[in-house]
Image 1: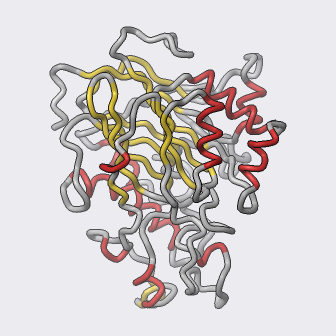
Image 2: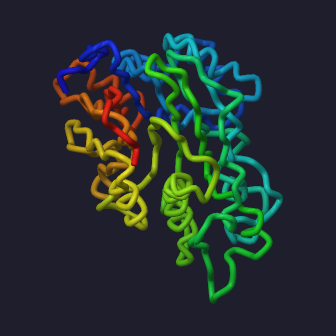
Length: 340
């Protein structure tokens, strides 16, 4: 990882990163309050991680959404980014239905995506380059039942938790966005998402199947079945909440995405190989759940997982910031890359 902390191989190299900050708070407005006070150790640690990574374009997860955008604006300014973007996520969005089958209404699992309030634990993009907000594709409203070949939850051959609930259920737990960014090398589409954890459900495997289809949605886009696929260079970056081999979940979804011939699995390395999250041992333990996957238009210059060794000066800061680790990739456009 010789090219860390912003040292680029040449001028046309761009650094893309993804990072689940875990900055979400337990109530609306609390994240903005903590930002405004300027005394929160976790926020300070996250900002230090962002400064150290020095990414040109950064996909964030675990950041609360507010309608005015004030919190994201403050975070972007503190992190030194000129451009930022966020849409209302599905997390905490009320449905008025029993979405988890517990017989009660109004709980965090009865929202379109798990959330104690609307916008809890959303997504955002920070960029050094202009974002074409008017041209963003927001796939977050896609209903799960509308997903081609959807793997829908059932109990006794009946829709779970009910036909009415499943008919109203959006596929995206948080969101799926295709965001065009005006980089020095031209328009690059950032395809970002944060999938449901494939746990915290019952034998119907509702969350596991939803996670599976959230990951598979990107291939449906590239196949031309959902939305409009980018015609030029793109990056898939986000938290898939699924390891190719270990932990819970239907691992075939992420394996298929990593093996897709239109993408490059960079396999960035950190202290624990490709693992990107420090969860409790022994279960679930360290896993690879965050990904930066460039299209084959790009040549990979360098990559890594920001997971310092214990004696590294950044180690304590990184651990304070989030259980997740920032994943980054340095890319330059490949003149022979076709994206085929």
